[in-house]
Image 1: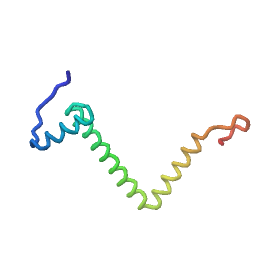
Image 2 (image 1 turned 135 degrees about the vertical axis):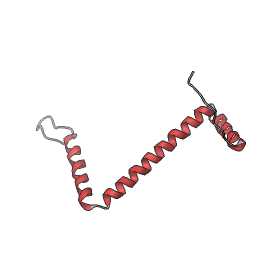
Image 3 (image 1 turned 45 degrees about the vertical axis):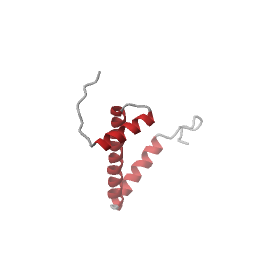
Image 4 (image 1 turned 30 degrees about the vertical axis):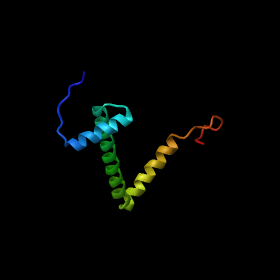
Length: 87
């Protein structure tokens, strides 16, 4: 069994967690794990969006990024067996 600890929350929050857990047919700790994972993913995506926005504001950096994407797409394109060229 995994180690556990006590987390203090308001009774209303406890009741809401238990209700949501029952609706999803999981335990309250499983629901909390899921909610924390979703929040971490959300923050990761927000950070990535901010990074891309910053990159797009710099035309030279954005052009370099697009060139790199094009190079990866060319390198990973299927090779035509007859001609030996991508496509």
